[in-house]
Image (cartoon, rainbow, N blue to C red; front, side, top):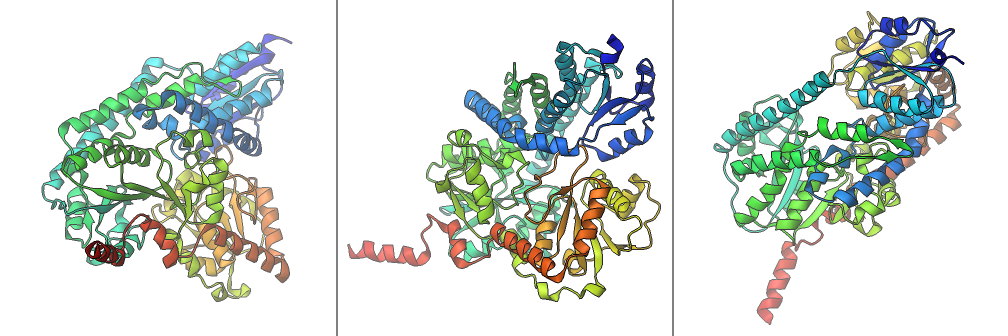
Length: 624
């Protein structure tokens, strides 16, 4: 076998297919290859422009299988690093956070295993189109050892790549100081909270929807909790994090000042040195050595080091929680309890560290406010990591299904408690009987996701699947993305006449639909609560938030043929089969989300002394 027949052609996604064609002219016959990138639009571009000589190997199901197999070893690897580097610089790193919603590190490791398992014994030339230089450099090292010749179709400039990375990092650093400066200025016009004894601190994220009429604050993470605690006689202050707002910082803080709630403005307490402390800690995080990192037999050191370098200034604002807790203590404030979201992400961990250090008697409650998807790795803590990681005293879960997931992964059963599903109260208010008669309903409802690339993937696959079928289709774009942008990205001039575009509420459309199809999101739980069967579209080359067995009513469907067959099957179910499927879905929802009851709300007051109990203790004290 000649050397040219055992060549690995490596090409970056930004390059042109013609470059690959030119380099592979000496290879006889068809050449198989892989697209290793998350963007469906880029994948479609390559797939459409590659000539017949080049064949892209479908990777969706193989990739999903590898993800399921490697997720736990990856969590164990991060836990081992945590034991080794247990420190503030470690806990502020994106590597330790392993948030697959923002970090590609785990997915890229899975890409490497996919290529090795598929091609190591192949013995023929193949090509790799990748979004990551580090992935290709690791492939080069692995396959050079196996006797393959490496042909770099795309040439990497280390100087240019370094400038790009640090150009972005300097931009993040500048924006950190700029946003902080703006909010420091705003803080001079915001009334300081008074030191009037112990108080409960609620940490929450604030977007434009939270600014209600008449200065009523709509807490998306903890709806109803502030009112419940106030009614029990407790002083409550909210620590807001502004994100995705349309108004200025000044407008936001002015609004907070006019609200009936008390908001804690951290910028009133921080000193100039605290901002430089944040930068110092970030640079220490970058200095963590990732040398000879072996993950299931592959050296992934380059991937880990690059992840640390690219994200060094990602969480500068979060690091400010450490000096904030110190400044609150110096001012004599007493935080008796802090209630924060539990997603096991960097902001929570730093608050946990700061509160434990400066308010050791404070009770820390983490509230699981979102659905826990298995492949969003940051949600899960192994038994080993749970022994030393900064975690809340209590994790309040809003469903037994999710509580069992956390315990199975390694969180102690004693650390978890069942609580109310504050964010999903509406699931218990649905009236399935109000669903329209089948004759007046759409056959298929497609709620499109926020990311344009994901939306295009869904609409293209479903449109191909439904060709020739006599079905009525309802389509709803995400509120933050116009349908025109999606059509433009997908090169769609207009949809067939049996497709209808809606801006109606999700509830109205679910009542009018027989099947829901889309990428995984909370709307699937809404559909199941309504009794609407679901179909989850599997991503072609990227990570799905959950595996094939997460929802009990269906698996992942990747190809148009599979989608088509499943639609036909669901639409042809008998009344008895349909009733069983609906009952299964509603039972699953009831396991995931608990109703809001007074008894379940009491988990947030654990450790508090209610007013009537205070009076009883006072009487006992006076009696003695």
